[in-house]
Every structure is written in C-alpha cells, then in structure tokens.
Image (cartoon, rainbow, N blue to C red):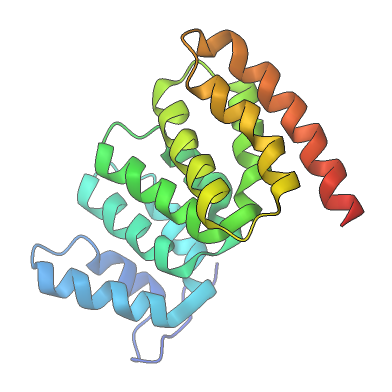
Length: 179
C-alpha cells in the first residue's frame, strides 16, 4: 500500500481511514462516502482496519466494503463473519452478498475448514440463501448450493456442513469451468 495515495478530496486514504474512528457520526458518514468515491484503491486500507480493536472502526470499514463490493475483500469479509459483534457480522454478510457469486468459493472453503464456528455458519446461511434467491444465479448453480443450505439448517451442522460444502465446492468449480 502506498501511504501517499490521494483521494479526489485531497487527503490521503490513510487520513480518511483514520477518520472512521472520529467521535462525530457526521464526520464518519462523510468519510465513508469519500472512501467509496476512492474505490478499490481504498480496499487494502479498509482490510487492514478490520483488525482494529475498536468496534466502531471495524463497523465503518465493513460498511464501506458493502458499497465497494470488491472481490479483493472477500477473504477478509469471510473472516469477519466470525466477529464477536453481530452488526459487523451482518455487514460482512451483506458485503459478501454484494460481491455476488464470487464469494461462493471462499465461503464454501471456510465452511469446510471451520464448520464448527456458529457465527460463520449463521453468516454463510444468510449469504447463500440470499444469493440463491435473489441473484442472477442459474438453477444449476442454485441446486449445487441447496444441500449446503440444508446442512446449515441441520440439527447436526458440524457433521453435515463440511461434507455438503466439499461436494458443492467441487461441483461449483466444475460448473464454473464449463460455463
């Protein structure tokens, strides 16, 4: 990351990201809009901000990532599905939804390796269900994900999710290659 990247408003991205922790809600809101206007150049800075101990800063960063819908943020957003703060987890899921089908593979990979994490399962359920219902997903791709959705609803998710996610991931990759 270059520390001296300037936004259209004349400040650096680092200066803007630092303002996400301002006590004034109006300043934070205006800063979000400026970071959104900055576009994908802001994503690495926002990702770095997700490790902050300050809840407000993480929330603000994820809020910007929802609007940017940049695939580069997907691995970090999948991790944020496990944040202790519900609002941050919800926004991370919304950001993954905003990236569309691009978020499916990393999400399935997380479900394979970390299926015991209840927050991850909740967020993954929200993302997968939304993408299946509202995105321009072919019926074939939606059918690939249906067993994962069912596993997330299961009474024994720790057992069923990794298997369903692994099978879905293999089918997803094969379907994406052939399309």
